[in-house]
Length: 285
Image 1 (cartoon, rainbow, N blue to C red):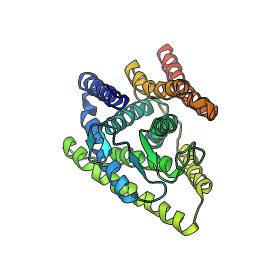
Image 2: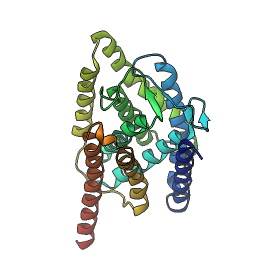
Image 3: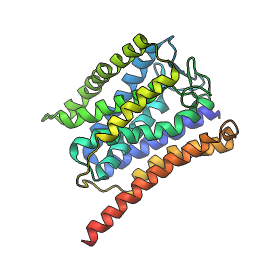
Image 4: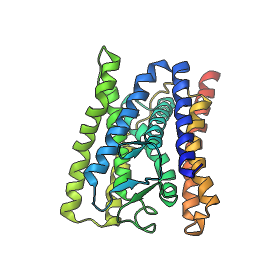
């Protein structure tokens, strides 16, 4: 069995486990979860189509067996797991309701920062026009901007759109969210073209957007509790990255690959510990 098929089957198993967990313990999120799957199919395929042939575009390794058009199944399923667990974690933090789409999007980004650099070195996908020593260890800044905005669009509209028929909302949400993403992202691409930004300057744009997201988060009241399953689903991604950085000796190329991956996991751990401490204090009071 090829390494590519092993990854596909493993992520499928995690997806089914996550769906089973939702059906059993979080039924109100079933339509949300399934809608994120449709959303991932839409934006992944359209992003590949719209950026085809350009520097910073990407394509997936054809050694994967199962595809939704241009996108492997496992990528779509992984997106759903990341979106769902990010939202659940965000709801457990002491933030105001309006901050929820911002912190949830940052939690989505946190995982991408840890795994994208590993995936491209394993040959899962390729960023056109980028060497491993360019961008963020071979990943364009626009990828991270895209992750932030595409997840933010979905989280934001999920909170804003109120309809009596819940399933109808989640049928329409993927399309509406992608249109909102394009409305935010395309002006940035146009600005990039006009100013002729180089690969490093593009990262300054990303940092500005990142800072805006950070400062959009306001402290509030804790909303939900999160159980260990949610944390476990997320740690699989971090451990995947760290394992292959060590097993494939990617750290020899640049030790920062390992150190940053560990740092991102520690940030996640710090958030979990903080949430648990708040919960313990509330129970004590």
